[in-house]
Structures are given as C-alpha cells and as structure tokens.
Length: 385
Image 1 (cartoon, rainbow, N blue to C red):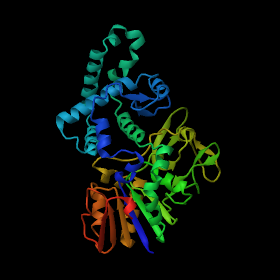
Image 2 (cartoon, rainbow, N blue to C red):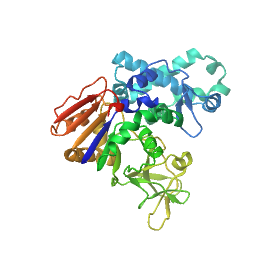
Image 3 (cartoon, rainbow, N blue to C red):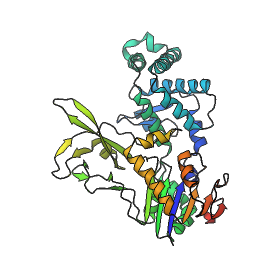
Image 4 (spheres, one colour):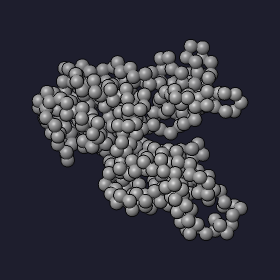
C-alpha cells in the first residue's frame, strides 16, 4: 500500500499518562527547594510521587539540597529576565545560552548559597556535620552537571508504567492496525519516551531503531550492546529524531598512561534498558574483543530539547543521520500520519512544507495541518483512524 511516514509529538503519548509540554513546564516553573533527589548511582529524580525508600536513598548524599537551590535560582532568574514560561523549551535554551557565561553561574550559585543559609542557618553554626551541603556552592560552578540534571529530571517524568501501557492499549489499537496496512512505515518521533516501542513489543511486532549488535564495540559482561549504525531495514522503523530515554553516549578516551584518560572526538551511541549495563559498559576491539576502555564516563540519557535543536542536530553524528533520514523519507512517502504534533519545530515544518502531493491525516484536536497537501483529513483521536 505504499510508504507511510509518521510524525509523533507529545500528544501521542498523553493517553498513557505521560506529560504534555504544559505539565513539564509546571514541574519546572515552581519553587524548587528540596524537590530534588540524587541516587548513589548519579541519577537525579524529582521528589514528587516517590515512595519513602526512594526519597530516603535520594537524600543520603549532599548534592541534592544545594542543587535544588541552584535550580530554584535559575528559574527565578529566567522569570525575571524573560517572564514567559509558556514554552518550557525556551527556558532550556535560556539556560544553554548561559553555559558560556561563567559569571552568571557564579552569581546564581552565590544567591543559592545565601538563600540556603537563610533557610537553614544551622549549616553555618554547625559546620562540621553540615559543611558538605554548602561545599557545592562554595567552589566554582560545575556547569555541565546542570544539563545532566535537566535531562535526568525530564527522563524521570517520561517513565511510563506497564500498568498504564496496558490500560491505554485500546487507545492505540487503531493506530497499530493502520500502520500494518503499508509496505513500509517510517515513524519519526520527537518524543523521548519508549511508549511506542513497548506497545509494539506487547503486540509481538518487530521494528527497527537503527541500532544493532553487528560490529558493536560496546560490551557488557562479554556480550555486545546495540550501537547506532543507521540501518533501518524493517517494515516498521522508528527514528527518534531528538533522542530517547534509553540512548547513551559512549565517548572514546585514550589511556595516555597511568590513571589519565584523554578525550577524543570519536563517540558512538548505544542503547540499553539495563541499569548495570549503562554503568558498566566497556569499549572493545570488535575483532579481537580486547578491552580498550573499561569505563563509560557519561551515563546521562541522551535527548535534546530547547529551541535551538538545529545547531545540535547539525553537529552530532547520530542526530544528523536521523534528520537526513527524515529529509529523504519525506520525499518518497505516499501517505503521512501526524499524531500529537503541534508544529512547534521549524526544522520539521520546513520539510513537511516541501510536499503538497501526499495524503495527510492530522490527529490533533487543537491544531490543524498548516501546509498544503493532496488530501487532508483532520481527526481528533487515533480511534478515528
């Protein structure tokens, strides 16, 4: 029946209980003091909706308290400078721009320390047992950790339970039935969650994500992990244009002797849903299986947000390839299905606008398809397919 191109936005995942942009905005645009948890493994989480054990474990260290005050000051600064939290991605772009301004971060850290001492004066009066809570705010800002915190916190909101998936399966049945009618389906999703993958797996449907263990150089416990190779050879192919909760970057380092590892410009992406695999993956020679690097220095889930995605996409091996796939696939598609996308990404809109001779089904109760097409069907729900 031809080639179907699918574009998915946040509205696609909403029926399963995952947040829309306004939900993420509300979680960030609030008083952030003491709202963060940091697990011993390095992951950051929101305190919201966590059980007592998780909250206890997330408070065993020191960093979660001062960084909650840092995040609070960042939010306050944004609201003072911009006064517009309607689009949370503008907030992330604001912070990313500040990464080049160390003096701004120094001021943020100083204000955070002042506020923390004001709220908890005993941190000063009892310096021996409590000094670690202030040490983060006393030394020079560790800016890169802010980006990690944002990614972890967004990821924390995008975890969908198996119960929610089962309860929402009926909502997606027509979608799954519809895509099976086509000879080839290329799904380009802007979502970072893995709802779609789990829905298809529960239906025992095969799909390709552009990752494979073939010639993989990333191993865990002697077995290869799937690495990105841009091979999309299935009937159903999922291209995650902006990354995913289970994508991790393996930066290549060279051991120059002793304990020092020198970073290189070489990297790859691997995928895993295993906690230990992402922490203890190693890099090997694919032919000899000799271990070349016995640790991965970055276990933050890799996805991009903000209003300046074009710059990131153009300078990253995986994101550039994925977007090239979108450009080429849109040229051969006979039909386009768009679900839950509100046309807020200029790089996506630019490509959609190039074609006016395919059939479009636009599933969005609030935003109509803004470009010309051979035939346009507007539906409110996937059940209307």
